Length: 251
Image 1 (tube, one colour):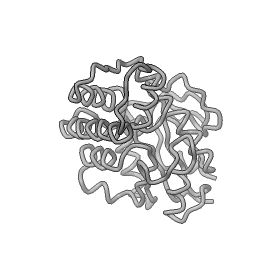
Image 2 (cartoon, one colour):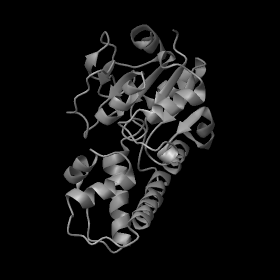
Image 3 (spheres, one colour):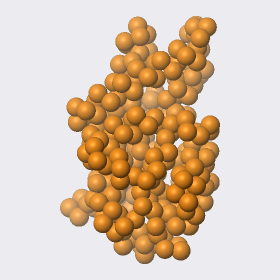
């Protein structure tokens, strides 16, 4: 079946948002709330075992800060912390502190020119997605994506395949007509669980993950003057473009 759509994860895939975006935004929210918590780079790497910001806070309390006495309205309190984190994250985006990864803008432009459909499937909040797109691609870019499946639109977060299944159903496309882009093991399990061929671009946090089932693994999507290292799969192409996707990964 010919390639008809590209489905992108957001955090770590479109931009290196985790280490230098979400992590300091969480820390700013904790400080604002009068908490002495501080998630350093190694700690946040361990917390990334869990997808979803509210879920990550719960995981931190259950595993790393077990003596903290939670308020009676713990769920609402955690949701409030997460909302504050999102506000700080959006501010950072507006200040231009989180750029796109190499090759992302180029590939999206090529896909649009080729008439391919675009979608997003992510566990981050819709507000985070639209803020990133507006800050890096311009406010009109939100309309480039036919489907933005984000946040709590499905009950189960990655590695459950529900978010990708939702995106496919919303586009009325079979998995065979699409290629997914991910950066993490949980994301890959989610996308392949929905039947999607998946291209993985690793980052500092996911470089050592096991990516069984990935169609191709690269350092990033590459640019003509900044080719990517191919870590696994494909025939050695070091710049991901539409022709390469059609020739090497499309069914």
